[in-house]
Image (tube, rainbow, N blue to C red):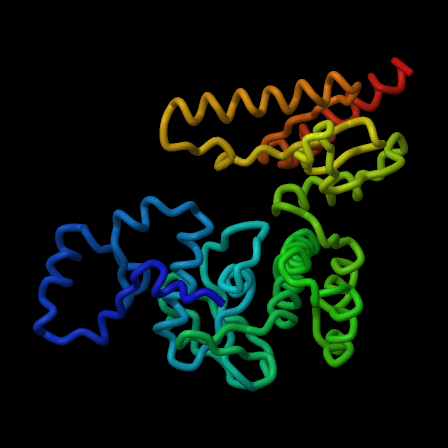
Length: 316
């Protein structure tokens, strides 16, 4: 596990002496910001971080300051370096064993304690903080955040670590049969793949799976397209019916240092799409917000897929 505290220069105020007055001066002038009541970091560094890294810094800061608690849920998954479906509003923590947390009125700001038995074998300690182990982390997510969130984390773990296979996950679950969330965990294993490239890609795949559109005969994630004899290739997020390419565009995709770099990136993307269309493929480019469901209606992503598949069928 990455040492997020060192990575972002987190400072524990309880370890400072009175002579470290300059730290307090920086808090006053805004150069440092508080992640928790006791942990601070550079405000400039924090503002440069993408949201998920800000959440990782916050989760690590909580881990630095809780006395006995163990960081769990999506916060723990993020500290493990795994992608998550959402960014939580509060860092979930457990007390080891059968200990019961204090009244919610006494919880630190930005922390929520969850109730449940946590054995010593389910706890890992890294860089001075405690987090739940991988299996307990996913089970916690399956129980509290749902199927899609659990699949996202499993997809990410399978992509990073070859040892995390469906067989391994099912075997580890055998000892947890009586825990809440096990059925959801098992379903998430069956829906997971080893080569999903992002949380939004996983989410789009699950939306298609649950829609069960009769027009769809196959969905292949991370399909590779060779670029002639050069040995170079493109990889697309997934391919529907071997004809429709779906690409999920994250906001960070075109982050560049200069306008010239941005123009180069956009031209390369245009050339990539031209190669696909010249070979008869339909390219469907989706933004994450188009995956959001609208009350009483399908999400825009599903509507677009239906329209493209209908067009493909009528043109055949």
